[in-house]
Image (tube, rainbow, N blue to C red; front, side, top):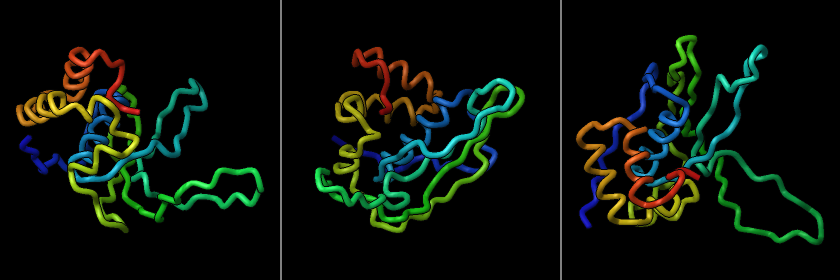
Length: 162
């Protein structure tokens, strides 16, 4: 399968129709660049309790707390203190705006073949047919929510993000 490594790069003041569009955009960018993502800190409105701020980070962001208990299954530490992230904030008109973007990683990025193994890139991303469709839709500048709906409709999945 031919794989395109070109990805649209997020930028400050980039506008998204919804929170899901913002996350899907960053997750697709991460997939094409060779890293996984996580949803990190958020803030809620004091009045409505709706999320109004969210930080999406590289899955190697931060450091894991050491657990000294005896009956703990010790797993590999994948955190390396990476500072790559994108922050989004909801504006009054309901759109989401990218307010911060850090592109630099403190670690080597994976190849496209290995990028699928990150938790944020689930089963739909592992399907070469679905990925080919995503690449075609993305190159035609199809909106992210429409790409997600089209891929999910063909794969029977309820979501392409973890």
